[in-house]
Every structure is written in structure tokens, then in C-alpha cells.
Image (cartoon, rainbow, N blue to C red; front, top):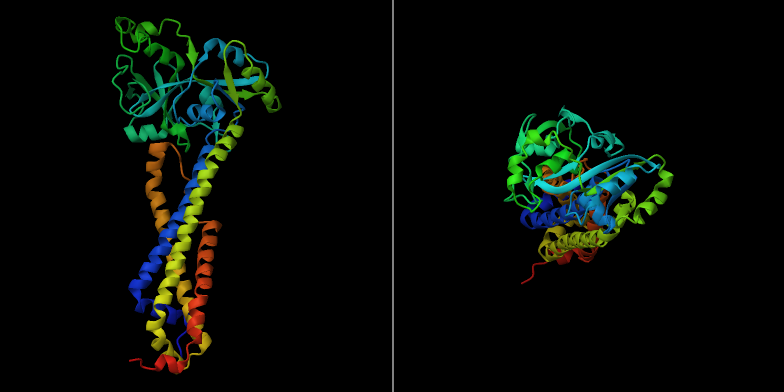
Length: 423
């Protein structure tokens, strides 16, 4: 009698024990989902952070730590630890080595989105990714004291278009009890999507930040705030007293360390100048321990999934001795039966790995907008790559190796032993 091809025979054998096979397949799918998912999220977060800013040589803020400075000034994570006097900003901007500066003023919000006080130099010099510059989807930069330029996520989430009014609130949370509703800003432009925290920011003029805080010196609205209307404020000087941070571009990058030293040792006030690339490197060192721990846990889950396949095959050996003996009686050799068990393990592992990857990419595509909305981190949505192929091949090969033991045990069973009826 002719024996069906091994792959067909393995598939029929698996279908014959569909429930136990389904549990094994589910275990592998979950383990691959977690293992590859951790790697995808880790790489996506790292790429998102690294592409947030480029072309900037220094970031200057109140003295704290370089990682903390980069997080709150560039990534909008956490609260500012201090401020920089306007005099110090002017002194830094006037240095011979400095080509351009972008002042930033943080501390307010609009419906959960960060409000960033800045100047038009932000749109001229801010770069992200591989040196890409900011582009406007509609509208243009600041031309009025109360103009605002919003990111793509802000426009999409709140449904804002050109001319929409924005009321800024005190604090950085989603809810505030102090609103500058007497001096609203007007949307003058919407930036094209960048995949960076810029998408989740509301950019207003530095002078506008000063204007809306006139009469709020005590943290609450005073009668002066009502007297100083928007029309009156447009006619007076509104030079800031202080800002939160400065992004600095140099004429020659080789002077970065020298300028950094000068800023860090300024006598006027304690400041910190951080190199963005070095600060990010320190950040990855900090989170590297957590990344390795998550990867190790995920790898252990994969091992558990493979053990489930091994246990399933071992538990079914005694029940299948008669089945194997019948196969032998119709012409299958010992090696055919040996190879059948390995083929079943490989098939379960392969299908489970493919199912895990399919579920992972479906989850990533579904959750990526939510992750970007909640954290500002854009996960790279590139399709499957060589890493995914390596995982599928590795899991399949590991399942085949683990199946060698039950296959060897079955190989030793004799034809007579399998056909014998035990009472």
C-alpha cells in the first residue's frame, strides 16, 4: 500500500488530534507574539526617540541631568525642573560659535496637549529624522501675537482647522481649573505629520505666553488681567523674563564641547548644556536593563511553548502505539514513523509562529494610533523582516530538536508490541 507524503500525513495526524494540537499551537503563538512584540516595541520606541530631533548640537536648560533635560524639552515627557533667564538666553545666542537658537517655554497645556512657547526660528531650524524640516499641511507660521501652530495629532484629535480658537490652561494635565479664556489663540497653521512629539504640541509665540500671563502673577486671575485686553497687549513690549530651554545649532560642530563647557560654567546662573546624542545614549543605558529583562522573560515564554509541544507528543505516545504499528504494517519504515513525529512538531511550531506574528502585526496596526496619542511615541510599522523570519525558523528548528526524544522512544517500539492487545 502506498503511504501518503510525510507532510500530508503529519497534517492529517494533527487534525485527528485537533484539540490538543490547538492548545500547542496557541502556546507557541502567544510566546512568539510576546517575544517578537517586545523586540518590535523596543526598536520602535528607540527609532521614534532617535528620529525626534536631528541637526541640533546642544540643548540648554536649568541644571539637572542631561537625560531629564532632553526628556522634558524635546520629548515633552515630565515637568521642567527650572528656567533660564532671558538675559542668559541672549548671551548664549550672541556667542560667536552659535549659528541659530530656538527658545522654548513650557508649562501650560490645552486639553491634554502640551503648549510650547517659541519663535518662528522653530519652523526654520527644527529638524527630525534624517534632516527633514517641518512642513505646513495648511496655513503658515506666526504673524500675530496670538497665533498658534498645531501639530497633526492635535488637529486630528480636536478637529481644529485654520481660525479655530485655542484656550490655554495652567498646568500640564488634561484637566485644569485655571483657563486663559479671555485671551484665546487662533490657529494660523497646521504642521504636516512628523511622527514626533511635535505632532502632539500646540506652538504659540513667546510673547503670547507672556501676554496671557499678565495679571496672573499670583497664579490666579487678577483685575489687571481684565484691564489688559488683547488689543492693549499688542501695543506693548512683551519680552519674556525667562524661558524653559534652548535648542542650539552651531556654525561648526567641532566646537560643541567647548561651547558646552562655557555654558555649564556660566557665572550668571547654573545651566546645563546637553549633547542630544550623548543624552540618548545614557537613556538607553538606563532602560537597557529593563529591555534585557523583558527579552529574557519573552524567551522563557517561547521555551515554555516548545515544552508544551514536547509534553503533548510524549503524553500521546502510548495512545498512538497502535496507530504507529498500523502504519508500519502498511509499509512505513521505522524512520518514516520517526520522521512523522518530528514533522508534526515542526508543523505545530511553524503554524503557531505564523499565527503569533499575524496577531502581533494586527495588534500593532490597531494600537499604534492609541500609543502615539497617549505617549507621543510612534512605533515603526514596517512589515515583517529578517528578524521575524529568523524567529519562525528558530522556533520550528527548536521544536524539531525537542521532538527527537519522543520520536526516538517511538522508534524503539517494535511492530509486535504496538499490535499486541494489553488486558
